[in-house]
Amino acid sequence: MSDTIYDVVIIGGGPAGLTAGLYTSRAQLKTLLVERMIMGGQVMTTTKVENYPGFPGGIDGPDLMMRFQEHCQEFGLETSYGEVENLIDRGETKEVVIDGKPVQARTVIITTGAEPAKLNVTGEQEFVGRGVSYCATCDGAFFRDVEIGIVGGGDTAAEEALFLTRFASKVYLIHRRDELRATKILQERVFANDKIEPVWNSAVERVEGDSSGMKTVVLKNRVSGEQRSLDLEGLFVAIGVIPKAHFLAEVLDLDAEGYILTDAECRTSIPGVFAAGDVRKKLLKQIATAVGDGAVAAIMAEKYLMDAE
Ligand code: NAP
Image 1 (cartoon, rainbow, N blue to C red):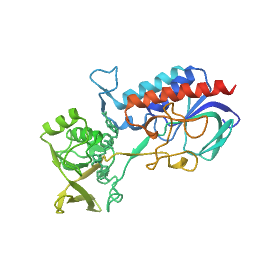
Image 2 (cartoon, rainbow, N blue to C red):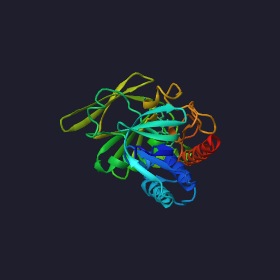
Image 3 (spheres, helix red, strand yellow):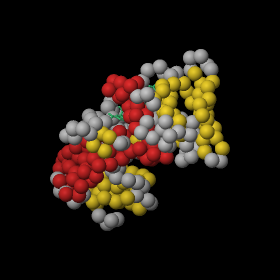
Image 4 (cartoon, protein in one colour):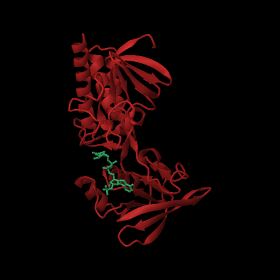
């Protein structure tokens, strides 16, 4: 691997990365896609995707991502697993350091996506895996016939609250304001579900429990200041995402929240390095927009390579 100079190295195997890989491998550019954990990105933790065109009735997130991968395989995309630790701009080539080993590339497309944000309250870390979770699809089935909570007011919290009602006897939807941010259709489903009880204007103060797991969530009403304890077996946290670009903070221009700054054609502050999908600062984070970004970044990388010849 180390003697090869790739035309394109793609960092991250979510919808943006796989789309970029599909385009560049189909364009017969020598491409390597590096993924840290599991191909498919955040979509792998989504039960049903209802707003990706072409799948009336919806499709399971993992099924959709399996199709993306199969499609890339058709064009011979080379993939590998490893953690990208650094990116060094050497002008005509870029050095991508994967698990301590340098890989040379003429262009790089960063599609590392985002990961769930943490509440950063007492007890949260202590009870991760013993009540506290960031993924309803992964852990929901462990909470059958018990009362649980989910924190957040966005699409993820609404979707996950609905999903969790399949297992839990009751789901408290704990939100810091008195209205949800989630899209109308999801709000309507949440409010129509008898198993979901919204808890408005409430912030999680701490999570308590014992050696067997979490037992209680202590909330504070942000309007009245009153404290309230809910005895819950589980707490799902769905308060948004943080971009996975911290390893590039010294290399690329990021915004204050850590998103990679690009122009409309996905170019970053380094010529030949592009960013696509949720890691890029942009208005709308959807599978459809990640796919659009991946295609744009791939075409721009191809154009960059042609211009450099
Ligand atoms: P989001 O839209 O950023 O919503 C985060 C929610 O968590 C907000 O309601 C926010 O409250 C709350 N929050 C943030 N920080 C908090 C804190 N420290 N403590 C308590 N609450 C906090 O995040 P998301 O729901 O994960 O969605 C991320 C993106 O993916 C969005 O663009 C969303 O549309 C998209 N998405 C789309 C779908 C779909 O189309 N089916 C599904 C999932 C996600 P405030 O409302 O007060 O700010």
